[in-house]
Image 1 (cartoon, rainbow, N blue to C red):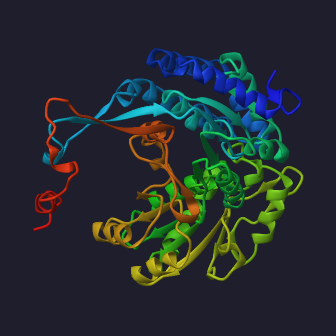
Image 2 (cartoon, rainbow, N blue to C red; image 1 turned 180 degrees about the vertical axis):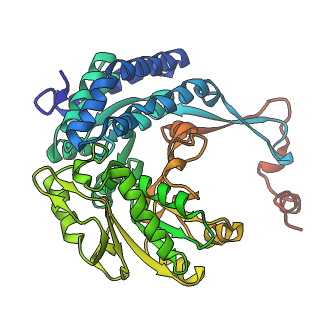
Length: 461
């Protein structure tokens, strides 16, 4: 059975893991690789249940449910690369430090806490977990209580695969999370909203615990006039309305060059009907809003010049893919991350206007730009700041394992994926080794007559 607050208290669970970690078992590379392979097999064995749970929690179509199981793709990469990552990383020495040798020695942190979100409730716990395992840590996982079916499957999968003294799942709500955060961990990894992220960071600060915060924000999508209109529309519609817009890197709003807006708007409407039919409520390919609270929040944003969509059904939390045109920057929908199937459309005349508007707001997790013009790409890259950028597409940057994924400013702290996950859950220990056979005495007292030599050694004339 999964560990819950009715089971041993948080301190007991944590102590059990610390005791196991102190045995040194997790430091062995073969042990780590074996656990990663066991995790892979468990995901394969549970894949049907994982996909079904995504449907129960979010009304996902089967195709989108497999996004959760897609964690296997990154897991295969980690299994292949981990033997390289654990090796000491040689460092060159300056002439003044010779003779000697230096290297960076990755070592595990200890016991880490991973708190998952509800929007991709399995995949976004598995991804940091594989980094924690590869780095040699024990881990406690706290899945989101807002995705109860997935939480249950995840707990059973983990408890069937690992000793809870090594990897444990703690299910529960806010009280459970608060009890966990009151304990001392060696690292806390949180994925979710900015408000709760601040609370996690505040709790971690009391224990001087380092954190990785994967948050979100309003990810802009700049659309230049020099584009393939049909392809742009296809990609934007897919990325925005995937999982009913409940994706942290979904395009939050469009900033469209005014000359191309009529053609783009027509293409977006056409593509929406091609994807979801004339009655999206009957489409088997559109997810639902996760709960009543999120649904009512989105209903409060459903105002303005609705071009297409706007239909809803509270009974099954259906909200049609919606385009809102001529949105102003001070509109309510532009004051918070939307996290739903509503796409505001704003216009600009010159690229400088769009960039200036983006820079007046908190730095986003993702930024998208569509243009055939490389100078447009470069100007956006050089004059804006965001966690990641994707040019002429959306979402796909998250699946390049050699790139870090993380926010900047309000959109997050730290990064992960691939080697960056390994480093996040490692202490990169600096090591300098010196021989005994040469010991120049100019650094030792007495210092008389040595100042001139020392000044030269540190770069002064």
